[in-house]
Amino acid sequence: IMFVIGVEKKGKNSLFNLKKARKFIKPSRLPVMTVGKKIPESNVFQQVILPLDIDRQQKEKSLWAGYFSRFYHAKVHVLFAKYKDQLLKRKVKDNIDFTEKLYKNLEIDYNLCQIDYEVDDIDHFSIEYAPTIGASLTVIMMTNYYTIIDYIFGPKENAIIANEKGLPVLCINERDDLYVLCT
Image 1 (tube, rainbow, N blue to C red):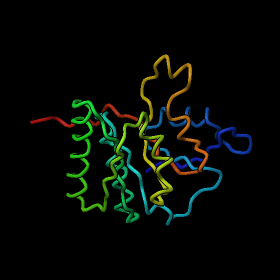
Image 2 (cartoon, one colour):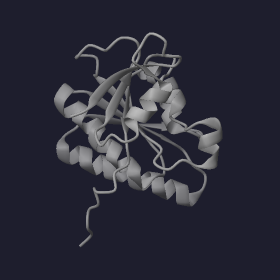
Image 3 (cartoon, rainbow, N blue to C red):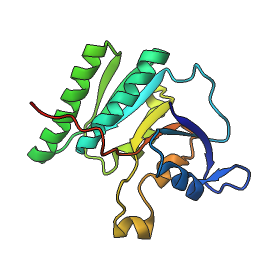
Image 4 (tube, rainbow, N blue to C red):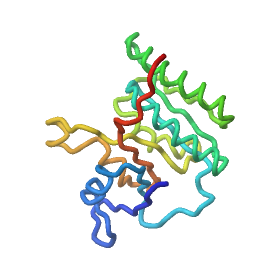
């Protein structure tokens, strides 16, 4: 149901360096789990971080984080930042409400973790936050359309995919064919 690849930042000894990994992940319809130099053992996924922000596509991450709870009996830590702007607060609240409703219906063990300050990139912050709760996996969405800033400095997921801590990252591409019709 997913690919698992080993990614190194400078990639001399592995099949996937950062550039090759992005080229592999970008067209994939399946999620891709990136790991460091060694593949984690099967019982390592007991604490999963689900970083949520204002994008409505973030709801797709909730489904995939829920799979680890259902199949590995993992605890999902829903990580979200505090915003001052009312519109941004409402967007994050909508994503959290969706996730809570989904997890209550599926009986998934989860925990809400609010950061008391604004964070520019919640996905990158989840890598730094992982050791505080003993998390062993984080779930991110890949950038669908690159901007000029992404071409100049690289997409935001570059620092997350091949992170220094070797934390496995589940990379999910946005899909346009998963719309639910409203009645």
